[in-house]
Image 1 (cartoon, rainbow, N blue to C red):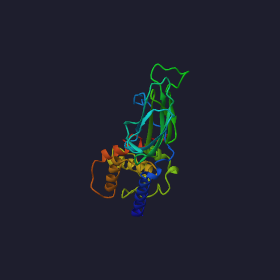
Image 2: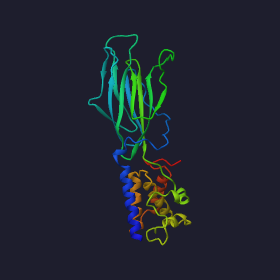
Image 3: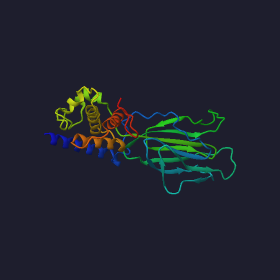
Length: 287
């Protein structure tokens, strides 16, 4: 029973992790609370430029960039190639417009942006667009003044011209969300399918729920085991587990399975951070 239970849990974890890493979910609707937008559009809008920024989950995203001209004789420039790659935390100028002759008014062109891929383990969350931004002073009765507009589609159309620039920020977030040890201990009815609270927890002499309910009393084994069970349940529930957390989880798996000891306190701290939504590139805490 012990080995069968152990194998079933590890198989469930492997399947859930694989699902979280599938590129099929790249354009799935977000199940998350949107990341904070504070200081989101950090790029300064520059006349005649379209800037594309990426925030949130670490890694590279790719985009297609196209445009519909305004019918004037402006000179437009796109990056070399149809697609561009932008690293999270950075911005790229993906389109420029230059006047070929002085004009009092320059009709806007429309730039088409589509997020094609985002980092493994993440999902598109939202965009924040400062469209057709006018450099100061701004007359709102004459033209838009660049209010930020939140979007929920991976496809974004943005207007700009040689006098005005625009900035679009794409936000990616980790797949799923994580519950703490306390939540899983008190909500066995919510445990993912295939997760049986009465299964033995390795060779501990108690069950998965029993180890969750045990008073820690400073025992590193119990403290680690409780965070381990919560992490396993979070992954089985669809939450992405980033590589650094997975390393600690795998080390704990080997230890509980009879392997040599190690940094139990460090592993427990890493898993606790994951379960409470604090892990780097990990999922947020479930609300």
